[in-house]
Amino acid sequence: MIQFELFQQKRKRLESKFSNVESFSLFTFSEKESIEETLTKFSTLTNEKISKKIQSIISNGNNNIYHFTLSNDKIVFIYKVGERKKLHSDTFRRAATNLIREINKLKIGNTLILPVELSDEEINCYFKTHEYYLQTYLEGFKLGDYKYDEYLSKNEKTQVVTMVYYPEVSDEKLLDVFNFTEVLMKYVYFARDLQNKPSNELTPKRFTEIVKGQASKNKSVKVKILDFNEIKRLKMGGLTAVGKGSDNPPYFLILEYNGNPKSKDINVLIGKGITFDSGGISLKPASGMWEMKGDMSGAAAVVSTLLAASELKLKTNLVALAPLAENMPSGKSMKPGDIIRTASGKSIEIDNTDAEGRLILADAIEYAKRYNPKIVVDLATLTGACVVALGQYAAGLFTRSDELAEMLTKAGNVTSERVWRLPLWDDYHALIKSNFADVKNVGGRWAGAITAACFLEKFVDESYKWAHLDIAGPAFQEDNIPYMSKTMTGYGVRLLIEFLKNSF
Ligand code: BES
Ligand code: MG
Ligand code: ZN
Image 1 (cartoon, rainbow, N blue to C red):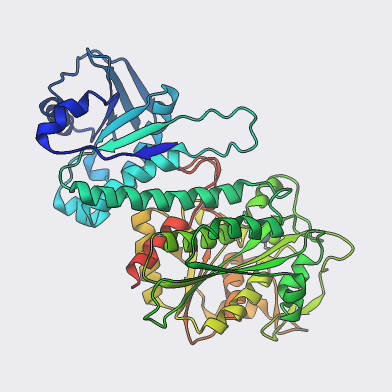
Image 2: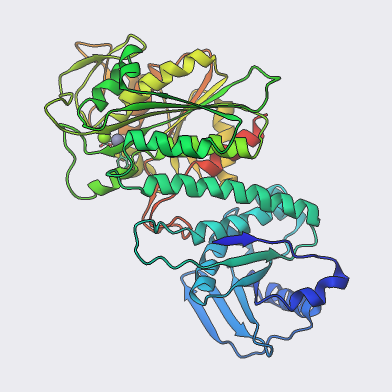
């Protein structure tokens, strides 16, 4: 557990304050000038000298953490983040992640961070504000400290207090950054916990209960839960077709947050909520199938975003929709060749029951219309094809709106929850033509991520701006990015909050 605490920056008080600090975390670029500048700054501030004797160097790839002990037993970490010209918006998030893991190993109780001094141009280019620059360190500490240990009989909890020495930002503003990051990260953790929970526990019903429990702590969030009867009554044929094969029935979860009552504008977020995707009758291969407990990552991201937005009191009107189901083979399952009808009235020919996400999303997109939304964004672990195209470093972005594309791309670059635009040209729509129904649920061998997006577009109205994010890559990780704990990442929460912050 990490807790942020204010370190009074007023000169006079510094000395007595330093006596409570157990360790210092100094960040520097690898160039000599930068290292010297950092060491001088440290000595001037603390009157301490770092001896030439390095206790140890922790080096993995580009990360070099030098570990020293001062004469008074305090520990100093010097973190070389690489060359200055290679600086990017994620540099310190990644560094802070690696550092907190070392701090945890050494069981150090608190640390004072001294960030690198950046020029105004650098701040402007990569972080926009000093506050956000600091936030990336704090996010890194939190992201790196995350563990999914609910099921471990032995879970060791560490407690690290993190302070920042950064006179460029007033104590007051620093507190704001702490509080903001604290709430934001709480919901990244919330999303990760949901993703990591195995499907034997996290059934569609349990998903609604956990979210309802969390939402009840916040009076400004309204929760509606539609059960299977209601789903059938609303003629949600997609969600019904997917959910009926399982003993755990489907649900449809709705969260509403009215953060800007003066405005009529409503943004709707939709998240794919398959609590387990076996593929149904068109069963998936065994290897890696366990990962499909995370096929509700889109739903986790959108509900977490809405809860975070309400706790952060963002001035926006938001709705989060999560169609929830388990995709299982059984005597009651849908079968290839079946034709179903969604809430929109459009018919779908099922070619492969493993292309289930788009079926439940079609009903959710239809449901979104009743809000007369301005923007609809859906997040879904929709296709393996998108992971083949982009790997785990970016979500596929599909939209007809250049404006929306730009906003999401910018938010993605700042948060490093990146998106990459792929086309929605009409030509691709031809690939999902059906002989027997309005549309077919798969489009053949090529461009699987795009044909899936085209399928969704068939259910979208032109009255609002729509974007689809295929998050099948970045929702899971195999350790490519340090702070993305192995497997589940909470991808989308930081991206969407940043997007929402900029969109009003
Ligand atoms: N949930 C999967 C997509 C997926 C794959 C997510 C890998 C994360 C990692 C989705 O429901 C699916 O099975 N898609 C099929 C579609 C195909 C049958 C047209 C796929 O990608 O193979
Ligand atoms: Mg599937
Ligand atoms: Zn799926």
